[in-house]
Image (cartoon, rainbow, N blue to C red):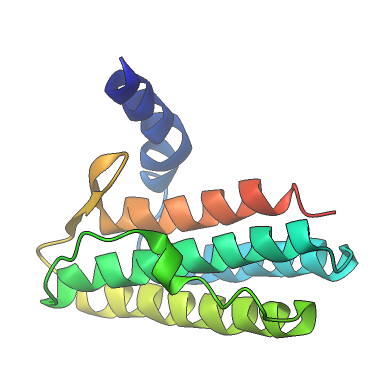
Length: 152
């Protein structure tokens, strides 16, 4: 039952929206989405809960890069996102800078997908199963946008 629910969630939140976009569209989508995330974060208080949430967003995005590199010939590694999150002792300003740098690298990855159009663009997600790279890019937009809303 859990797998079915996750498939439905993936369809409506990631797969269906990604059908309306090309790889090239994700440069603008990720840029605009990043600005929204930064606006939320810049208005938020420097609280442990907020730092943890931003560390989570950054960690997921960096983990996703690693997964997406499979499309360019890197080996698949099954691991959790935790190792990709910034250190727990990072200050709020440092985390804001980490997010900005992380998002710029994600945008560069989207540009690489647009340029190279790799043939093998299907990558395993731990919960949602195999997803096309374009769906992963939609996942990153959606994930960050949902998660940052709890930052106050």
